[in-house]
Image (cartoon, rainbow, N blue to C red; front, side, top):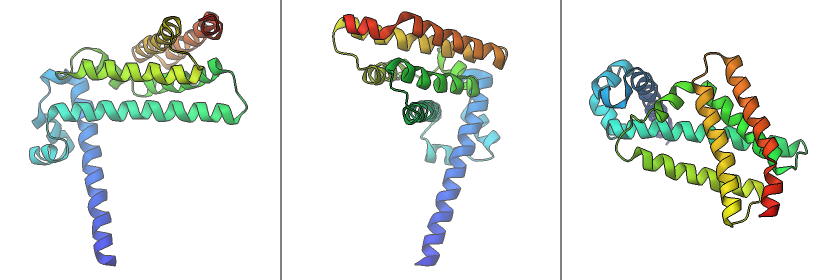
Length: 206
């Protein structure tokens, strides 16, 4: 039983490493050529793997692209959630400041993974990807509405959507910044704009 467990653990580790290598290779190849012009053969060659292995782990080029997107979004969500939790632990209770804490982490991730941000916003994705992005965007708005304690009336929905759009557009600008300093200036400008909008007052009026 011990031998079997060790074998299972080794196989799992090898599978995880193979997946990681393919995702990294896909990130590089898609970043260099875009989705449409990238080939499965180039991805597996760079990963040091095989076409059969790629199809076994992902199913194809489209699924590989979507796996990259899902991992990227999961990293965003985990970092933002951790930042909000840290702020709460430090005694922050203002919903807008909690939103800003999460937004800072989100924008930090946009700079760290700026190649992926640029890849996902340039419009060169597989069929159906834009629908996936829009669906994810609506879920992001919903999460921000919960954080801000927004209601369901039109003004509340619009306010939260506008705040979310500010963060999303800031992420685009961060990802296309030439330097980290420039990226940080964009992030600070976004935080300043959110505070100036005084969203809690708008939501109370709604």
